[in-house]
Amino acid sequence: MQKHGFRTPFLRDAFIEGEAKGEAKGKAEGKAEGKAEAILEVLAARGLPVGVRVRARVRGCSDLATLDRWLRRAAVVTRAGEVLQED
Image 1 (cartoon, one colour):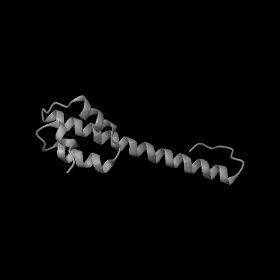
Image 2: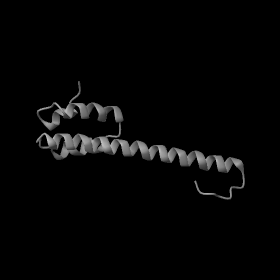
Image 3: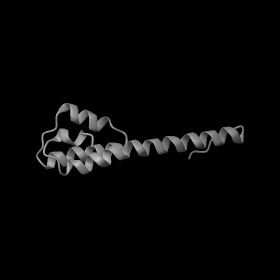
């Protein structure tokens, strides 16, 4: 963290809290992006063509539990679209 000349402890604390929240959000977004790319890589490695709709939905998802479920499915499905099917 950079040193800033805050006039009050409240402003300093608010800045630190905002910085921490931003960092946490960035990490979560990075994890989601990584999992989405892993899903697409697994499908590609298995030789399954991935359509534009599936690719967009996978890349647009930010829910880590959903992405984990889709990643497990990517290892066993016979068509890429099956990854997105509900249980």
